Image 1 (cartoon, rainbow, N blue to C red):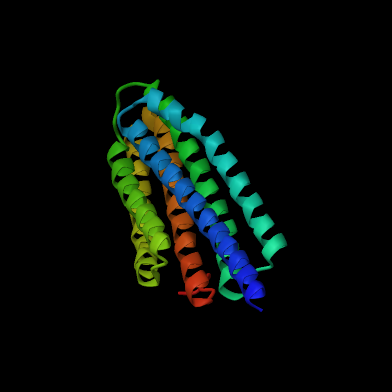
Image 2 (tube, one colour):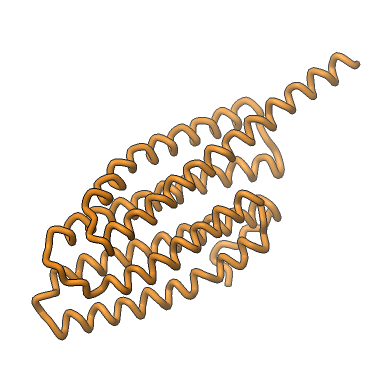
Amino acid sequence: MTKKMSFENHIMKQFDEELEEIRTQLMEMGGKVEQQVQNAVRAIVEADSKLAEEVILEEKQVDSMEVDIDEACILIIARRQPAASDLRLVMMVTKAVNDLERIGDEAKKIANHAVLLASQSGATEGYTEVRHLGKSVCSMLSNALDAFARFDVDAAMNTLEEDNQIDLDYKTALRSLVTYMMEDPRSISRIINIIWVIRSLERIGDHAKNLCEQIVFVVKGKDIRHQK
């Protein structure tokens, strides 16, 4: 009997270590994409094409991290057959990894536009909007990752509310950019690039919102997607 319990405890310890490992890997991936977004926004407002190129190259590393974490989750499900809260955690990680990879994709899109904008004239219309929305989105993403690190449902719910303000800021920025184009038709091509940038930022906010919803799911076992 003692040997059996010792064996079971050993298996449980290994299982806990595996769960902690995928959680750690997810946080590392989150830190990577968070830095990507920050650098992509900075590349826009500072017209830094070199920094933008670095963001673009880092996307391959993010893709590789996604594949590695997904494989680890599949192995855990196959070998451990987790149930209840452990299964919710593994499912949440697989979904969160997808959202983080999408955030990396959006950061790469922003960086691509940064390269184009840096090669154009020194006009700065739209940069204020990018800076403001970028700051809000980076803050929301950081708060979502912090809430996940602590499994903090209250923090996740508070962060969810930030998406409403980001949506409003996005619409306000869009109106301003349309006004720029109407006042100066020569700026249309350039402003369209800026519009794609703020669209990517708004989508990053949506993915950060998804992360918060997944935290509630893993802690409370409640699916709050599509609910007000």
